Image 1: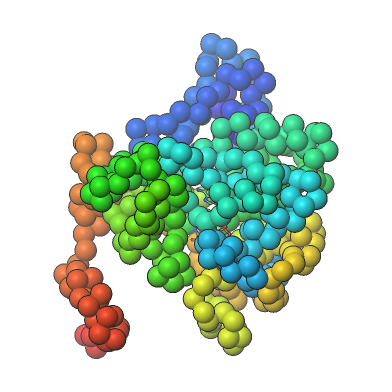
Image 2: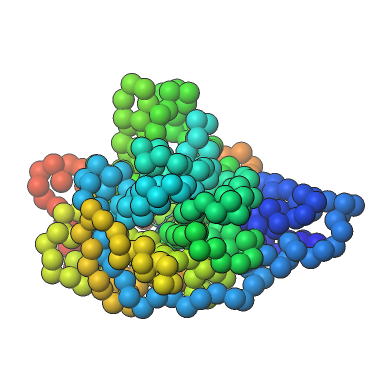
Amino acid sequence: MIKIDDKSRCCGCGACAAACPISCIVMREDTEGFAYPEADAARCTGCGLCERVCPFLATEIHPRGKEGFLVINDNAGEREASSSGGAFSILARAAISEGGSVWGAATDRACHIRHIEVRHAEELAALRGSKYVESCLDESFRRIKERLQAGRRVVFSGTPCQVAGLRRYLGKPYRELLLIETACHGVASRRVWQQSLSELCDTKHIDRSEITAISFRDKSTGWKHYSFAVTTTHRKYTMRQTAYLRGYGNNLFLRPSCYRCRVKAAGSYADVTLADAWGVEEESSNACYRDDRGVSFVIPHTEKGRAAVTEMKECHIEAIEAGKMLAHNPCITQSVTEPKGRARFFELFLAGHTVDRCVASAAPISLPKRIEQLLTPALRALGIKGFTNRWRRKKE
Ligand SMILES: Cc1cc2nc3c(=O)[nH]c(=O)nc-3n(C[C@H](O)[C@H](O)[C@H](O)COP(=O)(O)OP(=O)(O)OC[C@H]3O[C@@H](n4cnc5c(N)ncnc54)[C@H](O)[C@@H]3O)c2cc1C
């Protein structure tokens, strides 16, 4: 029977709950806002399936691909709404055009992040863009198995541990299944997300029921210096910085297992990895990568993944040695370090303080940084950019 004594050894994928033949495991949120399995000991028959499907207890994994690709979606609107270069949309559309369905993370009406199934290309908009919150998988794994057993084509996209969980749950490879993992810095607490959104709505006088879209990576201020955006039935609110994004960027409220990710450290369970092509300007002289609208870095790990990537249409695609790009993007293979401030953050958060206050206390902003933040908008408007960087470098 699955029992989580050490929270850093559970990624919350729910493979154990989906695999339980008598459904005696439920995924419940803890006080920090992360989902963990809870087994009903009185009903458990001790079959051990839950432990066998757990990706954190498993060792079987395939090595990462050595060849990578730089991809830019030709459709400017799709690229703009995607976090990187919009490679995901191209792979997803190919599956849909052949009668398949695509599973990925969407934001529901209550602004919870959930995996949903999409069967029509025009519905793919809901899946576009990174949502920096632990997504709820609900019954996704079981539904996917039903589709595959019926011979249907399926694309599943999620974090490396979700992909690993699905692969372990299915127990065998399916020809009709394409597994896509997004590179993953780590997933954040659902409770922190919900509270921070409520606080932001109070501050900006936004009626939550009028929210129609949320973007954690709004590119109106650029791909590299993205913003957070909330769109309502009346208008769009774009914010260069929020307490939530600062806390996420400082790794204050990631799932405990994200600081010790056993999946990405070992290799990949996916057919394809999608990431931001950070460092692309240094690795390629092609001017098309310099417009700051986003470039995808795509690594196929299997023959199936390679075929899907090389058959991508309506995009710019260029092969590149994966190792060169990985050097710019440590999050693909390494876990982030748990900051000292995490404990402080949750101490205050669980005592009822605002997310703003918890982040400010757990990751205080230094005085030079504060001055920089205050002056930057005015200096940008005057065309004097980067003065603090020069000043800092001079000081160092
Ligand atoms: C939590 C998280 C952390 C990330 N950290 C990094 C990083 O450190 N470095 C890096 O290079 N790239 C990271 N990425 C990946 C990157 O931001 C893009 O998602 C990826 O490059 C695909 O971009 P795209 O333009 O092809 O398509 P997009 O349209 O941007 O891709 C969207 C896909 O992401 C999936 N997705 C979105 N949110 C979630 C979620 N909460 N849980 C599971 N799946 C989700 C959707 O299902 C969809 O398939 C992260 C993504 C997520 C979700």
